[in-house]
Image 1 (cartoon, rainbow, N blue to C red):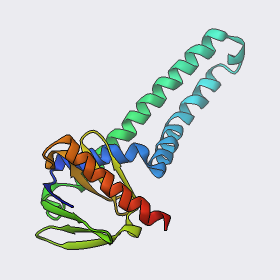
Image 2 (cartoon, rainbow, N blue to C red):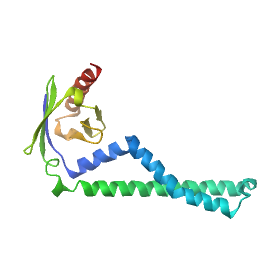
Image 3 (tube, rainbow, N blue to C red):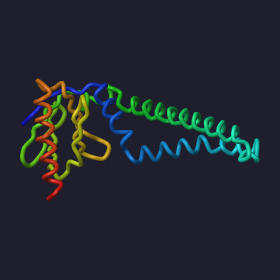
Length: 176
C-alpha cells in the first residue's frame, strides 16, 4: 500500500497545533509559565489586604482576577510557542519537509521517499499512529511525524483503510 502527497507549510503548522496540546513536556512548561507569571500577582493581592479571608467579595473578585490573568498568561505562552514554531519551519529552510513525499507500507517497514532522501523505518521504530479529521500522523520520534494529508486520497474510505492498515502494522510490531 502506498500514498503520495506534498506537505505545505499549513500542514506542518496543523501538526504542531495537534501535537503541542497533547505533549506532556509542553503542558508542564505551560503550567510553569502560568504559575511564574501569576505568583507575583497572587502575592500582591495577599499583601494589599491580609484579612482577605473575611471578605467574600474580595475572595471572589481575587479568584476571578487570578483566573483572567492565568488565561492571559496561557494565551501569551501559546502565542510564543506558535511564533517560535512558525519561524522554525520557514519554507526556505525546510525543503526536505515541504516537498513531494511517497510513503510505502510493507509488512516489515514504512519507507518514505522524496527527491532529497529515502528513509526506511521498521515498524518497531514507529512510536504511534494517530489521525484527526484532516491528517494521519505517523510518529517516528517524540516530536516528529510524517504528516499525511487526507486530501492525498481519492475519498474518505481510502484514507480510513490506509490509516487502519498503518495502525494495525504499528500495533502488531509494538506488541512483539
